[in-house]
Each structure stands twice: as structure tokens, then as C-alpha cells.
Length: 93
Picture 1: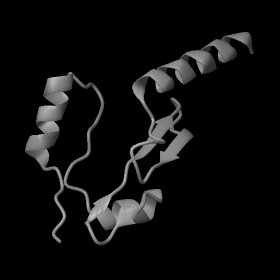
Picture 2: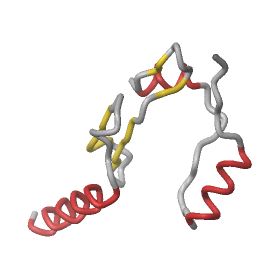
Picture 3: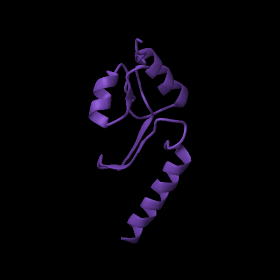
């Protein structure tokens, strides 16, 4: 089965529709991304399962979530809560 990868048109639309201010990747090789990130690549269906990363300002990964189903994914509310908590802890230091 041939894999489908978002192209520049899809990425541009996502950025515009969501008013994103950060870089958005497109046109990546699924197998290479899987190899580099550890995301689970499903060979039979030709796609990478959901994988989420939360980075600090220095670019260090502070949370990662690998999921092969509908649960276990990072969601915006949890990420915001964690960021808020971590920022409050920094103020205490």
C-alpha cells in the first residue's frame, strides 16, 4: 500500500487555518522519521502512529508519548497544564 504524506500545500493550509507561528514539517519519509524518532511505523498500512513531543526552550525533550491507538496521546490541555506547572516551579528556584 502506498503511503500518503502531506505536501507543502497541506502544511501551508494547516499553518494558515490555525495561525501557527512555528515551523511545520511536510513531505517527510515515514520510515526515516520512524527510525529517528522511535515512532511505530505500521508496514502493512504504510503510516506512522501518533507520536508527540514536548520540548523545553533549550530544545530538550521533556515529555514524549508513543501511541498505537486512540489513547495515550498528548493533548493541548495537558501540555498547557504541564508547561504552567514547570514555569511556576522555575520561579520558585
